Length: 307
Image 1 (tube, rainbow, N blue to C red):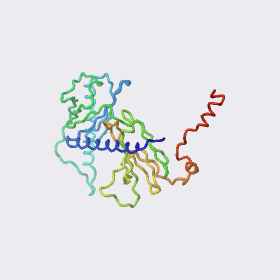
Image 2 (image 1 turned 180 degrees about the vertical axis):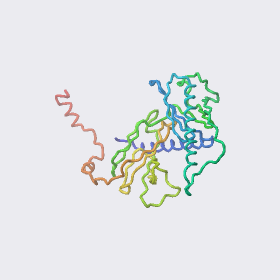
Image 3 (image 1 turned 90 degrees about the vertical axis):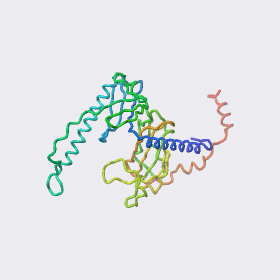
Image 4 (image 1 turned 30 degrees about the vertical axis):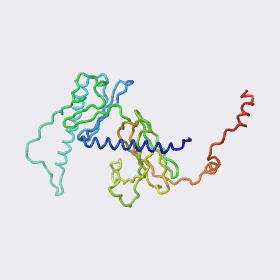
């Protein structure tokens, strides 16, 4: 595809402005208290809406509710889920206390009274600092900018933020060949999204200052990651990347707002490329677009098919 002169520089300028806007929003949220995020997906063509958020115990909840359902039922279900999460966390804590210690004995909490059973947390939805009535339908209650409160934790509701519906890296990656991730964006577009590439730290290599970003996989040992300096959708690995895996960090956007970021690691490490391909020699003779071919146009007009 041919590009006009200066188009690439203009795209870089837009991307830089988008990143600055993202950093400014992040700084504003930090100053304001950095509320948790509750993502709501609600489209008219579907009977249900989805609600995603993380509870205080670290568990992530994905709920599907009817759009025509009263808000009170959804809030009651959220309170039940929060209570179950609290009970699991308490049971896990008690199990750790009763685990055998290094001396072979059992560590107990002591003869004190058992803690009282936990109650369902207060769950409310606020919009413009006013509580939303429980008889309001879900489709009207969950508005962008609303605040969901679960106990002492507050969540900023984001309705239909940009999100990736598909995100995949090629299975086989070779040095010298561009890596073009396959992605689908809902409520956004790839041009307004942010991308950042990382490569796996070589075994035995020194950790960079400040430490690189952690891996997605919680299994140990976790590999280290180093920034490649490429913040575009396409990354072309070099021979220095052979034997290393790649990781893509991307944030969906539409030029005005951003959705939850995602990270994706390549399945296999970068392999050596085949070297010079036969078509590379042919491309040396086709670097420029040819002028209008008058003879070819006259031939086409004079042919029986063109008459």
